Length: 332
Ligand SMILES: NC(=O)c1ccc[n+]([C@@H]2O[C@H](COP(=O)([O-])OP(=O)(O)OC[C@H]3O[C@@H](n4cnc5c(N)ncnc54)[C@H](OP(=O)(O)O)[C@@H]3O)[C@@H](O)[C@H]2O)c1
Image (tube, rainbow, N blue to C red; front, side, top):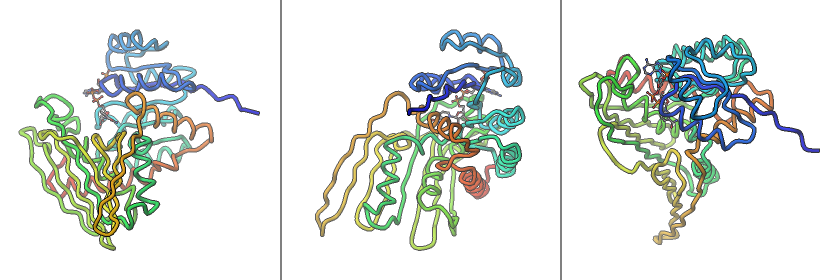
C-alpha cells in the first residue's frame, strides 16, 4: 500500500534573487507548497506573494514564524543574516534550510548547531550541489574508483560581477567577498571527497577590493597520502567554471558550471591511450528542487539532520573557511 505523502508548507525569509529561483523550483515538487514569505518590507512581501501565488505575506521575519501551518523555512538573506535568522526559526521550533555559507565564522555556526540539537529541530545548510544529479554522479564515480585513486581536485568559480560597494557581494558589513560566496563550493568539494582528517596544510592568497573584501582568492589544501585540492574563487575574473577530479588512472571533468553541472567527461588512460566518455545529466529548472526534496524526505523520516549534508560538514566547512580567511587577512 502506498503511503500518502505529506505536503510541506514552506516559508521564505529574505526575498532577493535566490528566493525567486527557489520559489520557481519549489513549484516542481508535488509535495511542496510555498505558503508564506517574509521581507523586511511589507510591499516587497506582497508583490512576491502576488507573483508566486503565496497565501501569506509578512513585512517582518518574526511575524512569519508565528504563521499557523508553516512547516519549514528557507533562509535566503545575505550571509550575515543566515545564523541570526536560523536561530529565530529554531527558537520557534521550525525546521530550517539555510543558504550557504552556513555562517560568518565557526562560533556562529556552533551556536546554531547547538540550538538545533538541543531543540531537536531539523537544520541543513543549503549546499545545493550535494543534491544535483550531475554532481552526485561525479562523486559516485570518484568514490567507486572509476578513475583509480583520487589524488587531486581542481575547482574554480569566477564570475565578473559589476562593482557596487553597497551590494552584498562587495559590502563587508553584509559578508561580501569571493571566498564566502564562491570559495565555499571548492572547499565543500574537498571536504566531501577527502573528508577527515582535515588538510595538513592550507595555503591561501587573495586580492582585495576597495571595500576590503576579497575580490579573488586562491587556496590549496594539502592532505596526508598525496592528496591536494586547488581552489579559486573570484568576483572580478570571468571563466566557464569547471572542476576536475584527478585520479591515478584518469579524470572526471565536471563541466561548467560545475557546482550544478549537467555534463561530465570521464577520461581513462589505457596504456598511453586516453579514452574519454561524456555523460549528459540534465536537470529541470534551476536545480534547487533537489535540496528541497531532500529536506522533505528527511522530515518525513523524522530526521533532525541530513545524512548527506550533515551539520558536522557545515561546521568543518565553516572552520576551513575561517582558516583561509585568517591566512588572507579577511576579518569581518
Ligand atoms: N545556492 C545558490 O546557488 C545561491 C545563489 C545565490 C545566492 N545564494 C545565497 O543566498 C543568499 C542571498 O543571496 P541573493 O543573491 O539572493 O541576495 P539578494 O538578492 O541581495 O537578496 C537578499 C535578500 O535578503 C534580505 N535582506 C535582509 N537584510 C538585508 C540587508 N541588510 N541587506 C540586504 N538585503 C537584506 C532582502 O530581502 P527582504 O528585504 O525582502 O527581506 C534581500 O532582498 C546569500 O547568502 C548567497 O550566498 C545562494
